[in-house]
Length: 406
Ligand SMILES: *Cc1c(COP(=O)(O)O)cnc(C)c1O
Image (cartoon, rainbow, N blue to C red; front, side, top):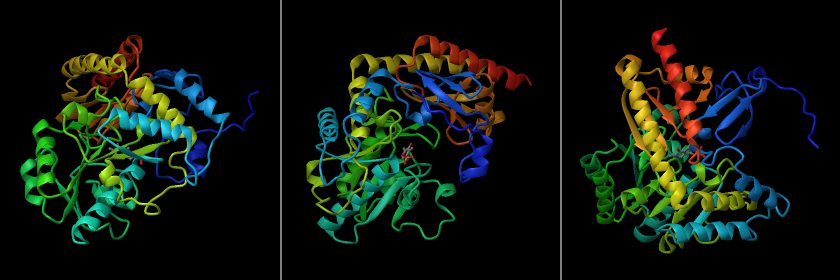
C-alpha cells in the first residue's frame, strides 16, 4: 500500500525552501505518543509538542480515527454550505465556554486577525471611526500577518516591512498602572495572552487581568484573550480564562485545538458576533470538515476531569524536577508557567543561551523549546505518561550535565 517516495535530506531544505526557518540537522519522520523517530531511526522524547500543538501527542488513536473517518466522507465543501463537523465543534465550544458564537479559520494569526477586525468593527458601528485603537502588551505574540505583528509587542517580528497598522499601543505586561494610563475612549480593544508564550512563558497576575477587565468595561473597550498557546487544556483548565475567573469578550484559539491539524477559532458573544454580518469577513478553508472533525475529537478527549487534573499533577512533576536540575547545575533562576506550559528561566551565567540548551537536549534524545533566548520552554502532550516524563527529564539532566561540565 505505501507509496515509494524519492529520498530527501535536510540539505534539500537549503536548496529548495525559503530560508525563513533554521530547522534542526535531523528530520523527524514518525511519531507515536510522546516519542518521535528521525530518518536514521533515532528515537527522541517530545516535550516540544510541535510548539504547544500536539496536545495529545503524535497519532493519538481518537484523532486518527476522526480524521480517517472524515477523510472517507468529505474533505471540503466551502462556506457556501455549512457542514456537520463544524456545527458539532462549534456547539461543543459554545457549551464548554462563555462564548455563544464561533468563527473558524486555519491558524492562530487568522483567529487574532478576526478578533482584531471584529473589535474594530464593533467600535466603528457603535461609536464611529475614532474608536479604533488597540492596546497590547510588550513581548506579546499574536501571529505573523501584518496586522498581528503590528499588534504583537516584539519589534523583531514587525520592523522592516514598511508601514505597520496604525493605532496600536504597547504597554508593559502585568503593569496595571501602565494599562490604566494608556487606555482611553479611543481604545476599541485590549488584547492579552493570559500566559505570554513566545515572550517567555510568563503568566498574568490575577489582579492584572481583573483590572484589565474593569478598565475595558469603564472605557467601552473589548477584552480579547489570545489563548492560541495557553488554551485547550494547557493550564489544567479548558481555557486559561477559567483559571483566572476573568471572562473576555473575544477569545482566540488555535494550536492545540487541532492537535496537529491546522485550525483556528475565534469565540465571542452573540451580541458582538452580529457585527460580522454576511460578507464582512471570511476564509476559504475556515470550518473545513477535516479540521473540525479532528478538533471535535481533541475537545472530547481533553475536556475531561481526568485529563485536566492530570495536567496539574504533571506540572508538579516537571516543575519540581526542573527546579532540582536548575539548582544542581546553576542553570535556572526560576521555573514558571501553568499546567504543561512551563518556562525555565536561564540564570545570568546562561542568559541568551536557550538555543544551546535546546541543541544539547536534542543530542541526548529529548526535544524542548525556547521562548525568547532566555527561557527553555516545555509544552509536552497533555497525556504524556510518567515513564516518558521521567525518561525525558533524565535525558534532559544528562544534557545539562554535559553542557555545564564541558
Ligand atoms: C502561535 C501563536 C499565535 C500564532 O499562531 P499561528 O497558527 O502560527 O498563526 C498567536 N498567538 C499566540 C499566543 C501564539 O502562541
